Image: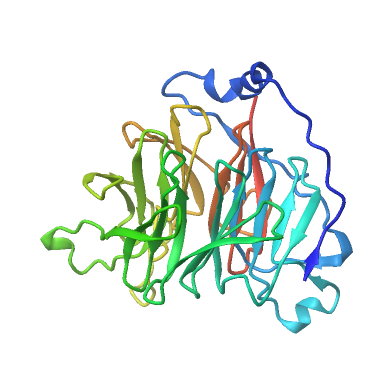
Length: 341
């Protein structure tokens, strides 16, 4: 099934104007990240009484349109007053729905993350199906499927230079797996573990390939990122600390979601900042990419009110520096955070 609304015309913008629009992100100095606050007007009310389930992923295209992956995991009673929203919904920068599409027999199970490549194709990862799919921007054509039955995919990044596809398999055969642009499997590698860390389960939950050819992997249960080159050669660890605000009596697990579970880069050429979801503290950490230092955080902690997070799970950054967060579990929403002038 495919549902569409009228598409908003996209105005061509000159390179000089794009530079001016991105200036608030770049003009704050080498070590000073932007400050953020939630935009309560985004998104606009959904059409047709649509109801969204868990948001498995969010990603941004070249027009700063946002794609949202709706897991459609609602209970019957949640739909008494509404209708199930489509699996893939495209919003413009103002938060209006411009397109939606789905094919229940074709889309992978367990929608988990997405990305948009340099050609504006949309890649969708299905954790339960162990596959990633490449679609045309409007979702009308499936172009490529990569993956394998022995994988449980979580994250995806497409190298803008070679076209190689980097995916993470999290809970089954945990590893980074690389495919070429035609879907042929090239290589794979696992996370680094010292002798004292052997008991830490490898749960690779995200991946990002930077413009300078470095590969960042979320080592979720070790509360850090691991940095490799594109061949899998280990470079260094990047710790992402978290704080326990309430001490439990030992009967409950703590720190189980990880403080580095999803990431996105700032959109300047040097990708000065990394935005990392700290699920344990329900906040977004801004890291200096060169050093791995945590520079600042935003988000209002755990909760259901605007600006708070209930299992923040996916993240994307647009060309203006706006940050989009998708929430799973009982969150079931996406929020936009804008730079505070």
